[in-house]
Length: 253
Length: 253
Image (cartoon, rainbow over all chains, first blue to last red):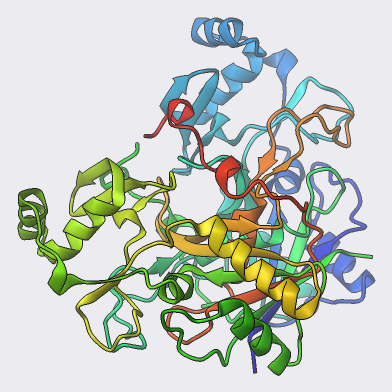
């Protein structure tokens, strides 16, 4: 039997606002579209709705930009208040040139603009930006626990976000928080078809799952989550930490 | 209707050797497992079988390592001949430290070891390594053309390989050659739900598709290809070039 995995977008989800019970909303949405969540599913939830449910939204009118933010914004025709928020969300600036800010967040993610995002804020105003969840593993666990409570099913949850990469154009979805799934699959020590030991193949399965679901979620329409069915993931509670390269080991930080 | 995409591993593929007609072999394998290729499918073929079909295999006994290769190999307990092959396949060394070689290949890919790989060579010997295809877009086109000839179907083909990343542990599959699909999906200029123009969201769909199929191919068993069905990709013949960041624009090269 060939292995088969299905990716299904979860649509018909209401606009998510602060305090929304995402676990219950997504459980209901899956049931409504005829595919109730079941044991072994991976529910991938895009960061934007998680942050909105957790009220990680900043009104730029409350922000006083620093001299650094004002200077960078002026040079690159950006909103100094938004730049200030990016700086405040960073623990370290990895690159700040050509109008691009690559920063390290307090979670340890290296990404553009500390993950701060201005699109699809859902306030009907252009004066708001969305921050990453404070603790994205905790966000994933809360959704997982709520789904378990409502359905008695054991699923994994991944919070995904769209990050740029070094060396390659185009962004891709990666995992920023996980619950119930080990984010890395370690083939080291396994033996390949030739009897040769695989030395260095550790696969970032949580990132691959997040990337996969970008094919059924969409930046323009309201598909804030997706269900991955049929993938035999390794269950575990390590959270996202194993996927974050230690600073000392990182040749590009 | 929620959007749905299925990923199916193509198994029961014979051992691929030099000169193998991959297009015909994979067409037959798909038909045999009850899902003949059809219009709109994306056939993702892992690099290793493509390189083997194209005889991109090097016998290390024919390699005389340079002083640089010998020194690096000695310091990090590696095979100096394999290091020499990596150097020969590189147009530029991006990092060479901690036993790690990050290089730029002549295709423009930045990856570990110039994409040279020692696992699953399929020769039954440990003295062989596999190089990337010389022209991976041409490899993809050949397979696509052959499938078209045999099935009269219009599909896209992606050649995938497993690359490490900056900042994050674990490797992931990316596209190294494409035919019939535009590798980037450009949302710039589109309007989000709040009426805000999306400024900078270009998605590397070819990489996301490659990553997705890693969930049904597997490093240890012989699943050298996968079919992605249901994804409304943008057809085109740009090849992989748009996904390669120009050196001058790259902050990490």
